[in-house]
Amino acid sequence: MPNRARFPPLAGRRAGARRMICVMSGHDERLEIVQGDITRLAVDAIVNAANTALLPGGGVCGAIHAAAGPGLAEECAALGGCPTGGARLTGGHRLPARWVVHAVGPVWRGGDQGEDDELASCYRRAIDLAFEAGARSIAFPAISTGIFGFPIERATRIALAEARAGLVRHPSLARIVLCCFSAGDLAVYERLARIPPTGAA
Ligand code: AR6
Image 1 (tube, rainbow, N blue to C red):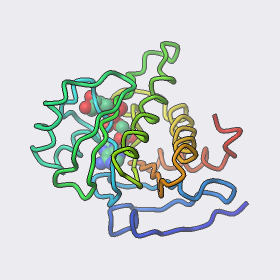
Image 2 (image 1 turned 90 degrees about the vertical axis):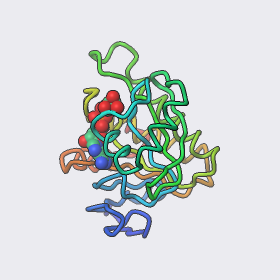
Image 3 (image 1 turned 90 degrees about the horizontal axis):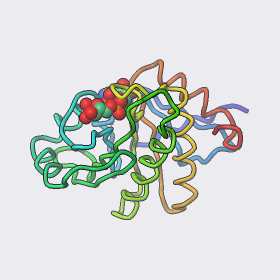
């Protein structure tokens, strides 16, 4: 089945996305995959790949804090941390996004320590938290696949399954964007997104 190109204004080139990948027909058209800098996406909520202390770190977390300004770290400090698999909501401060959802993915420990469930949980909680706050478009980075070392293919299957499940749970959600930083990650997301949902996870 051919891909169907869509270039909605929320995640287009001017919003920082370098490339828009379409989702195949037969898939939920509200699920989008892009390559770019998540801090530039004009969605209602962006998700941060956070740590349990909710402290500014490196990777996408560092980029989000740098773009949001010091008010984000101040708001995070007042939250008292977040367990692995959980999520917490703050404002977007100087970001285009109105909210940041700080989702704490697992540190990879070999794959048999509950990491899959923890990763799925933080996607699920992030979607539900953002939706309950009023967000109708949510963008995710590839949580846990950088500094935390989760293998990209295994994480991508979970990201796709949870994004699809979130869209089913919340029919009024307009869009979930999976934002890849590297071309290599984009290729993995693109390939796995072509597998029909029933065989994806
Ligand atoms: N936009 C989108 N994705 C990005 C960006 C960006 N601007 N920058 C990096 N990525 P990581 P983790 C991708 O390491 O593995 C922090 O210190 C990156 O290429 O940011 O969950 C936190 O505070 C990778 O694909 O998050 C935690 O302590 C993905 O984001 C810890 O790292 C996630 O990589 C979390 O580690």
